[in-house]
Image (cartoon, rainbow over all chains, first blue to last red; front, side):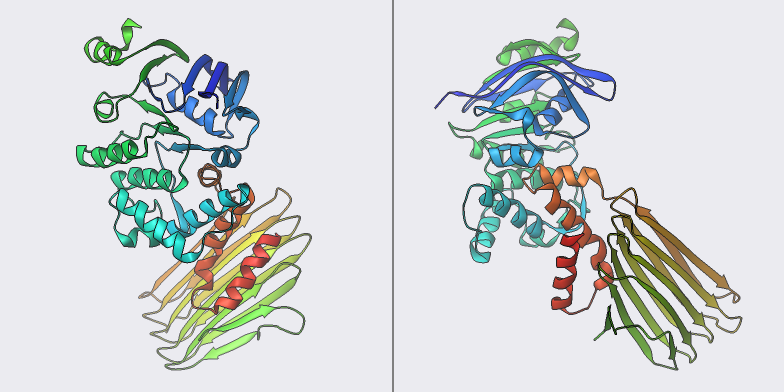
Amino acid sequence: MNNTLLDIKGLHASIGDKEILHGIDLTVGRGEVHAVMGPNGAGKSTLSSVLTGKPDYEVTEGTAIFDGKDLLAMSPEERSWAGIFMSFQYPIEIPGVTITNFMKTAVNEKRKTLGLEQLSAGDFLKLMKEKMAFVQMKPEFSKRQVNVGFSGGEKKRNEIFQMAMLDPTLSILDETDSGLDVDAMKIVADGVNTLRTPEKSIILITHYQRLLDMIEPDYIHVLKAGRIVATGGKEIVKMIEEKGYDIF
Amino acid sequence: MRKVYVIGPGIEVPEHFTVGAGESLDICIIVLPGVSADIPLTVDLTGEGADARLSGIYLCGSDEHVSFNIRMNHLVPHCTSRQLFNGIASGSSRAGFSGLIVVSPDAQKTEAYQENHNILLSDDARITTLPQLEIYADDVRCSHGATTGKLNEEEQFYMRSRGIPASEAKVLQMISFISPALDGIDESIIASVEDAIRSL
């Protein structure tokens, strides 16, 4: 098995007429955790949107190979089946659709593509229960409508819950720490750390050092004005904390 | 149990209902794809304490025409009425909802509500909605609301990013959109409505 999970080369992406990413190179190996830091407007969310196939964005140049496959040719659902998951910065509310229905459909659609049988109602509930406990969600959570009326912390825990349910190979956490208090952040970080295995990789998009103290990355990249301008280890976080992004 | 009318050959809704003192009317009207229909319906609330609940859905495909023309007459005091109609139009279908609530001068303490929500699935489908209130009494609670829109793409992307195919994501959205109007009806009818949604 090739040790490279994701290989992005010369990626340019636009929204409307505006180019946001001006040539991103990023290689993520299996089992690695990469943090992407950068100021507002650097293109962090554009990068995660492009990797998950959000329709509003257009890739104008470059390639992205995921697990040996051409990621950019795949639909959002195909990317999910292939093992990509994004924790949304702003999770979407879906009125009228319960968490149970939502996850049952998601889990069974993935099983269908893998040639597996649908989970029985009992097995599904057992899986739900186990993963809900994992992010400290109460049992009644499963009956609620997806993200409707959730607090900020509940929304982010719901994202990590879904991540645990779908068991992705590459998780992209898009500012999962924003708007969280320390307790909620700890639940999220513990969840992510538990899901961390030698085969699975994480891209952690963040503004802040705090989350990086809880989920230790192997590499830190600085994204600025649509390019990766620096890559290194923990020392980079320290530089940013002290001097801001202007030094890059 | 609510009285359900699944409109089709030989099944029509009576054009006129009278609801007397202390009585209630509770009906649900369902128009599935493959059916064109004009549905005129007048309800007279003629005795104090009369209550009417009307709900309905219309799922219109290809070149079908469906129109509702509802008139709710509050003739005496202390009556209540609630209406909720949700429709989805695809293809080059035409759907119309015209709903009038009339509150007579004598009908004080009336409570009357009406909502009509619509989803357009294609550029060629058309929906017209005309909610109207005529109120001649001064101590009443009445409201109406109407919306027409498309399925939310942000929701779809969120579901697709979790591995739910685009087509199934739309089905989930449509089911959740119409289900408030199917409150309290038999599961087997709901299942047939869900099958019909998949055919749109």
